[in-house]
Image (cartoon, rainbow, N blue to C red; front, side):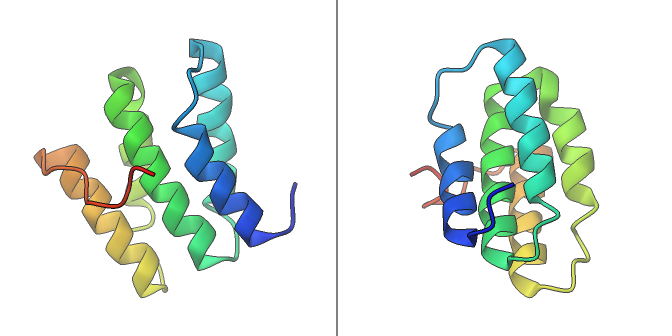
Length: 103
């Protein structure tokens, strides 16, 4: 996988702006799950945003993505746990997508 964090978080941003087939959505979600394991807080935070957007656009993936994000609620990084909280409030409580998450 690509080793530069800036490239990874930009890829995560780009994925949500593509017109993807159902099969491609599954591949993108799997790739984003791998990016959640990245050591870069910036990559993880951007990936959380992208997964949230994909869940909103693909209700059949929402439960799976929400479950995956819940595992990050107590992440040691404040940026990751904060972003996760916002994502879960959007997915579970219907709060609007935070400003700046769509690029």
